[in-house]
Image 1: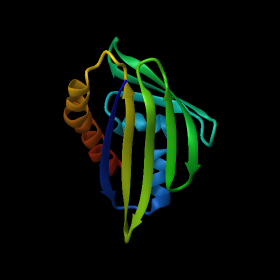
Image 2: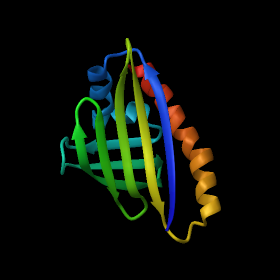
Image 3: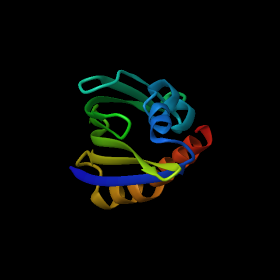
Image 4: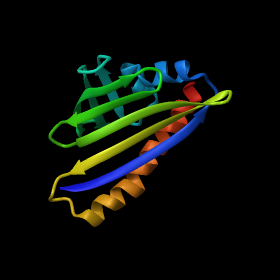
Length: 140
């Protein structure tokens, strides 16, 4: 297995409660998360399912919420065949703004060499997360 970590952050002009509500509204994640549709429950033990891709090309990512501390922190454990590891969504107050951060700590299959995994995380992976969080900021 190859472990990679990607974190993206954005300042948004909103109180933490407002940023949290938008971030944790799973169906609305498709409005800001690139090429992704999400559904699921809320609270520890709830399941979340995300379909990421364009047309017939993509994958389904199943998750279980392992930490739930509104309006500040949600941690999901990826349980699917393609994606393993954890995802962390955090909202922190920054004066009149809030900082929303999204971290993925992924465990990629052994057949993905470490160098390729690090390139995917640092290049395309980071670009997708950064672009998604720019969209999130516009929605807030």
